[in-house]
Each structure stands twice: as structure tokens, then as C-alpha cells.
Image (cartoon, rainbow, N blue to C red):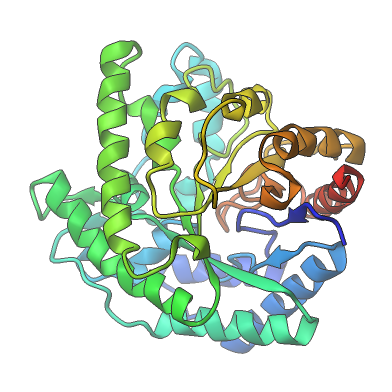
Length: 374
């Protein structure tokens, strides 16, 4: 067995019938057929195990997206008429490309809510169903470790505008207390909890370039991590993976905040495993940020060694080389090789990685991890 274990960051290609059902539900149609969901998750988990992944999940198959799924779980969130996607300030300087991305953004067909009332976790039945479905699929496939993803308070606040609390920190605190119910349920079930925190890196684009903008972003990151830690107070560090990213889309990413500028704050989170992009051309060099840096003894690095925005299938030897950078720094037993981000971030996306190619890329990941084992 390779010393370097493998996983991915959450979303995987959804089968066509389930995609259609999710889209219909998003438009106000019928609820998902739970038998169909269970069958799809069982197949997804089986394929992950057959591909050789060590830590697997449900592929987020029944979620419309990694963040807006909370619309059906939290009180106080109101459905509004589909809004035009917000301009992406990360694309400043490239207006033609920004328009191209806007025209085909998967979030155009996702109903992004707004907060217009007190926030609470309405009913744990949804997450309990996710847990039961994943557990049954894992048992049937002979899976090893299982993980389940959940949105962080910070990323919810980034996407879901507040029209009720009138104060960002109060809103963040309410989201943290509500999402604690989901985090605790996942932990109590014996699953690894992955908290999705794109806000920690991708949120930099909301502030101006320069030192003042960086200071403002770091303050925002610190606030979001503090809220997350409050929500994670009853989940042991070693059972939490924190996933951060700079936005899972093919684009220039020229305004991405460097990892070195936020890592110190990220490491204060109550999460022993840190997931980050490390395969795409903008961030592949940042393995060097960890060299010479003192890390907590229980920190596990979960670098992306597979680019989740391109249809290139990485050569296993390249994957092994990428893994080796981190294994030399913390040791192979503290590396969990992964993808940069999800392979199917939203159920409405039609661009990005082709489903068959996504599975080929995951196979390359596991083959590369085998090559990387000393």
C-alpha cells in the first residue's frame, strides 16, 4: 500500500438523469427520488474505490452546488428571482474573457438566496440522509475512510447576501452556530468532515490590489476562521479537512492572493488537514512556501496534484513529482494527494472537465501516488 494516500476535494460528475432531476428541483420542481440518489452514490463510491482512492465521499451528487445547497437546510434564506451573476473582479483587465465566462457560468442557473430572517438549522434530516447514503455505499464498496463536505460560514456569507442582521460579524456568527449542527452530525457519524472555505483565498478579489487591500482581506480571513473555529469547537482537529481555493475556473488568476500571504491565518483553523490548489499554473510553485516553515506536528498537507479545470490527463510521473515536493517537507505519511478542487462544482455546469476524463485524471492521481512512495 502506498504511504502517500489519495483523495479528492468533493464534487464528481453526476449521472445525466440525476443532473436533470437536480435542475428541475432547482426550478421549483419535484424533490429528488431518493432511490435514484442512493443508486448513483453507490456507483460513485464503487468507482472511487476501484480507481484506488483511499478517502472517498458521495461525490456531492445530490447537491446543486457546494454552497447554495444550504438554501434547503437553513431558515431565514429567501429564494429570489435569479440574479445576474456578479461581475468577477478577479478578471479585471480581461473584459472580453470575463464576458465569455459570464455567458456560460454554471451559477446562472443556480438560485442564489438572500438572508431575510433569523438563521437556524431547520432540520438535520437532510444531512442525516447524506450520511446514511454514503455509509451504505461505503460498506457495499468496501471503502476505507469516508468524508463528507459542508459549506463554511465564510463562504455562505460570501455568496448569500445578508438583508436581515445588518452587521457582517453578527451574520457570520449566526451562520456558524447554524452550520455547527451539520458539522457535529458528520463527526458523530464517524465521517471525516471537510469544510469548504473558498472565501479564504478567492475572497481576495473583493478588495483592491495593494497593501491596503491585502490587510483588509487578511482581516476578513481572520474573521471567517474565527467563526469557523467556533462552529468546530466540538469536532477534533484531526477529523477536519479545510479546503481552500482561488476559484475553480479556467482563467488568468492574475490577481490571486499568494498562499504565503494568508497561510499563517489559515493554519490557526481547527483543522489538521489543509487542502489547497497546487497543480494549476498559478499555484504549482507554492510548495516552496512550506519549506522551512514550522508546521504543527499533526498538520497533514492535502495538495492538489491534479488540475480540476483542464481536460489534460496528467502523467503519473508528473503527479509523483508534485507529491514528492511535499513528502520531502513533511514526510509521505503527512501528505494526502488530491485534486485542486471539485470535478463538478455545480450540477448546472456544462463546461470544465469532461466526466470520463475526470475519472481518468483520478486514475492518474492514484498511479502517481504509487510512484511517489519511497
